[in-house]
Image (tube, rainbow, N blue to C red; front, side, top):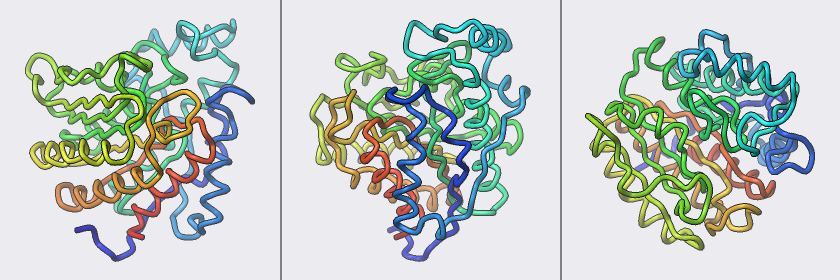
Length: 318
């Protein structure tokens, strides 16, 4: 069972996080960080966690995951205007710099956990799981998860990394980047792609080549709530115990909570707290407690504030 002892947890207190977004009125607006932080301070989480700051990821850190031509394309397209993809991700001035800070904040969280500054960490504006190595997608300019995976491997020598995703949308940018990598554990519970963007994440997508059978996709029908999630979650725990990761990255998108304007799942925030607590238990059991939570999606501000604060509280052991 999870420890009842409070543990050191790092959380991003940096208002620079608010600069990643696409303007007022956009689902991924600038106010998402503020909604989380207002709730966090009301629960005294600002005083109960250690601050993590945002920074710009270096070009070398970004190129460990993203292609050089793609990074150059972002710069050109943002100067021209328009979109970075087929129409979801606007090419706004400053969005590349803001996305670089998201990646840098995630890398700071990883570094702090690896150095033992805190046992777990949470970054609210992060988990941009749709961007691929060579393209933007679904409001995601850079994929901080992929950047973190490469950093963990190249700098911290952690080869076997688990990525767990409970966002309503399938984490396609991570899945396809590591589809043939047997050492990247991938467990994703999401709304069935027949009904929701990006249309991927079928249960039979279990990896390719030498990685066949090493990935876990669990699509859930629209309207699924906490009971359906908890039943499916048992598969995730069995999978992680079998795979024995060295580090866990947890994308806890809040768009899977009932009332989100663009999805159709019906979880309560208790699901996010439950998943976080169980992952902490598994992290303690399997990988010296090493886990970083990433906020991901969520477009109902009240939902994301409650869900993400529940994750931080679970990380703290409360």
